[in-house]
Structure formats: structure tokens, C-alpha cells
Length: 434
Image (cartoon, rainbow, N blue to C red; front, side):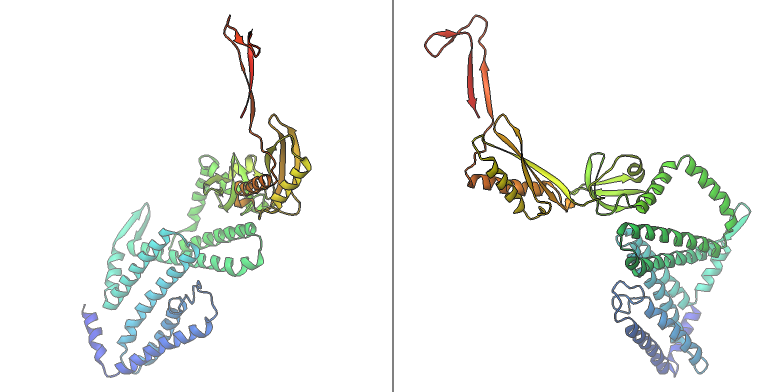
């Protein structure tokens, strides 16, 4: 605390006005540089943020300018205020890096927000310890705490430094992959499935390289990973073969484009739209809101009906029964007109109606029509067509007959039923409509 008290007491020196003016000038210059270079940047930009000061570039530029001012002005007078500003700006830069990268890479992850909050607390605690002059003592105590793993001895300080350096490398790798996806792949690759393949491949490669680099920075001997790689290979060959098959199948699906995001598919009796293709599973969402998580291996090894792979148009049919005294040509014209007056029904190819069978109750007609948006559901468009058919038939006074049934009553043994002429007969056949 003596060093902190000396630092606070030194703020009363005569040149504090010039020091304050220098710090304000550094912050203003940093804001001006950000304003000139980031006026047309999107609000999700990591460097500039939504309001320029909440991005990464502002504390970085302010940190560089403040450090340079401290070196220059420190030769002329004491600079305790600039010394206080350096750890604050450094902690702010680290917090802004995580606060902008994590929502960009993991927009809906609660774990990412918790990690961001945890790192923010750690960064501010480190800044306070630095300002109060306690950070060297804390680092010395952490260096005295040692752990032994076989023949390897590590310190708590080494573990913390390794975690910080590896975390920084991984965050930078995630940031670079997100920038590559948004700035390069979005314009270079128009197909959503191919873009998904490229994003997954780039992210996996960058994270692998970043992880190896972080281990090297932390002091881990990378040659020891060869033994771990052999163990992982044996595990994939036995216990993890299903998991590995799903991951490989996911890349095969994305590369071959046999299934694409937005396709309408039917898998094992479940029909819906492909909402997302992950490396391990595919998410299929039905029109009623239900979702099915299908392992990618199942999509490779079993039969899958893809209604959109060749042509997004889907044939929909509905049936109607009219009386035998109806004019078939008039009924066909009414059915086709009702379908054409429905919003989602395609005019090319046009709807067609056919006399399917001579039914027990009337003439059975089948109406066939096409739609090009099966992801929006087929039952709703069939209902709209049926309602228009019903109104059209009623307006044309075309009978929709009730089902006709013949009921035959058999008497009991030895009993006789009265006949129409007053006599008796052994059985009677009664016909009843409806």
C-alpha cells in the first residue's frame, strides 16, 4: 500500500495540469482516429463497435498514445496519472476484445457471456493490483506455488500465464475465422452449404493451429502429443467410431450437397425443412414447429427423400365427390379455376383435374396442382383449395352427395316379416340414404 499511497500523493505535483491535458489529448486523438476510419463500418465490427468507444481499436490506440506520452513527458516531469491510465486501458482493451468477438462468433451462447463476465472481473482485478503495486508480490507468491506431474514441475504462475496466452490466441483465431466468413466467404461462395463447409473447415484449422501455438507458448512439449494422437486414433477406431462416422458424414453431406439448408426432406417418416447442418447432426424442422435431430450417419446410410434436390416444386392433390347427374366438364373447369385462384398454387404447370373412379356415392374427381414452397406446409394450401372448391360447387348448385348405404335385415330362425301386400316373407331388404 506504500507504493499506492506514494502514487496518490504524487498526483499533487505542479505539472498535473499538463499531464491531464496530455491524457485527454491522447483519448481525443484516439477517438478522432476511430471516427475518421470507422464511420462506415457495420455495428457488429470488433474494431469499432457500435459507438466507436466500445470497440477494440479505441483503447488500443489510446494505450499506444498514452504509453508514448508517458515516455516523452516522463523525462520532463513526474507522470503518475499516465501511469494509472496504462493498466486501465490495457484491461479495457482485453475486455473489449472478448466482448466483441464472443457475440460475433457465438451469438446465442450463454456460456460465452459468462466467460466474458469472468474475464472482465479478472482483468479489472489485475488492473487494481497493478495500480496499487501489489501485482509483483502476487506474482511472486503464485510462482512459489508449485505442482509436480511426474518429472515435470510447474508453477501456478506458469499455469495462469499459459491460460491467458492460449485464451488470447484462441480468441484471435475465432475472430479471424469470423472475419474471413463475413468478408470473404460471404461474397466468394454464394451457396449456403458450401459456405458452411468452408466456414467449418477454416474454423477447425485455425483453432487447431491456435491451440498448438498456445500450447507451445505455455511451454508444453508438442512431441508428447504424438502419444496422445495415437491414443485418440485407437479410441476413434473402437469406442468413438459412431461419433467419428457422424462427423465425417457431416462433411460428406456438405461437400456433396446431397442435402442443403432449406431443402424439404423426409427421413424415417419425419418430414420438414433442413434448418441447419452441423458437423455431427442435421436439424430438421417440421411446419408445425417440431424439430428432429438426425445423426449425419443416418442421412448417409439410409434412404432420404429430398423434395427439393432437383426441383423445388411439389405436386399436391385433393379429391372431391359429386353426384352422378353432374356435368364432368363443368366440374373439371370449376376445380382448376378454384386451384388457380389460390395464392400459392403455380400457374405453370397449370392445375389439372381428372375423373378418377366411379364411386359408390358419386363421381370421384382428383385435382392435381403444384407449389414451389413446400417448406411453408402443404396442408394449409390444400385447405385453401378445398374451401374454394366447396364455395364454387355450391354456387354452381352441384350436388356433393351424402354416403349411400344399403341395410339388409335378416329375420331370426322361423320368424316371418310382413310383406308390402299384407302377406309375409322370410327377409326384407331396406335401403336408406345418409
